[in-house]
Image 1 (cartoon, helix red, strand yellow):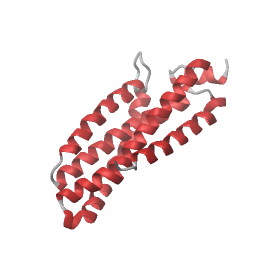
Image 2 (spheres, rainbow, N blue to C red):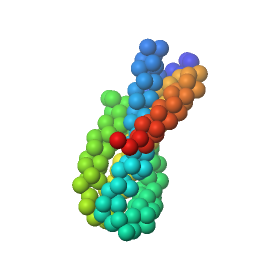
Image 3 (cartoon, rainbow, N blue to C red):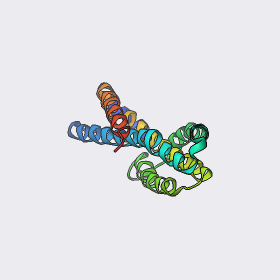
Image 4 (cartoon, rainbow, N blue to C red):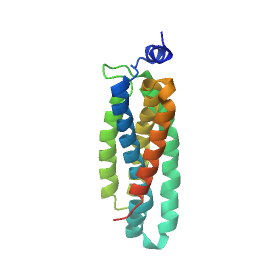
Length: 175
């Protein structure tokens, strides 16, 4: 049995076929670009504006507090999301339920954050966004070893790297 096939048997996922790999890489690229556009766009553009509108006099301290507390959620939920998606068994694979569920939850969490009008609400909203996006990111990251044959993982890593950079630049552009 080839190593890609063996990897699929061991993980419960099927490696992508030749045509499927191209589609998979495009999907992974789009997903990573969107994720990093969200991270950078909210953290560098929207969150500072929101905090300034709530507490102009203390905006730097408040943004530092919000960023610091939410970083704890990010650090905690990435391995939690990874562990949960590792243990998931469904007819759609291990990662898909987490990608779809966390993707939908991101929209809800961003809506909560967008409606926040107090420092506490911003802190809770951004922490919720961090928890959900890091759960999503953990499942997304695991797609490469699950579905990409070992000899093509360099290409997949390149796609992720370029998409991450493109997303970060796109998200950081105000207006």
